[in-house]
Length: 112
Length: 110
Image 1 (cartoon, rainbow over the protein chains, first blue to last red):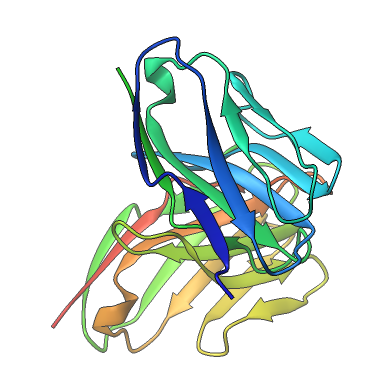
Image 2 (cartoon, chains in turn blue, purple; image 1 turned 180 degrees about the vertical axis):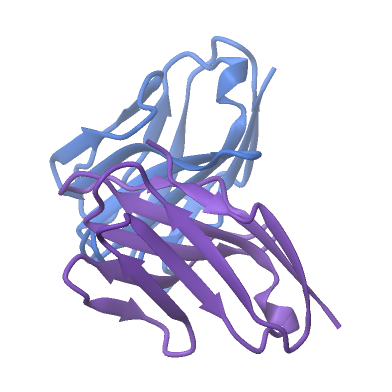
């Protein structure tokens, strides 16, 4: 099993550009989530999904969109990138909310 | 709403013990602990549930005081591999959202 995969690993965007961060898991997990990590801030939940077709907002959803059309994939879309979105983004999945979350390797995003 | 972790950082020598605390101002349904090494993804350590159930790795010890809204992670006989940043995540309202603390940096020296 590959576990949780994320692409790309690194990305540089200019302010105003849009892009999609990809996340996929092969463990048939229902629960998936997106976090961003900034120095000294810990992990902050952006959006999460409890199954295909079901998504909800986390702590810091503004500027991001998600959809979940399959169990395996949970892409995160940045609508119009801003320097404040410079961060490391982690995708995670688990068999349920109160289960072990498996994190992907992360995407380091810089917005100039 | 972010839980408060203490200490912010701790340095140990191999074989020493450490306690990392996580406290919240709101009632907790569960507390989740993760460790992250530099440049890597967080790795699951343990979940403590309201009512006393625990899920996690056998070598990790933790407590959850529901009344005090606190959890503590106990690292005994520390090894070099224990170095990293430890995060607690708290489930504030019954549901699917975790709010993580800012982390505790642990460094174990030989």
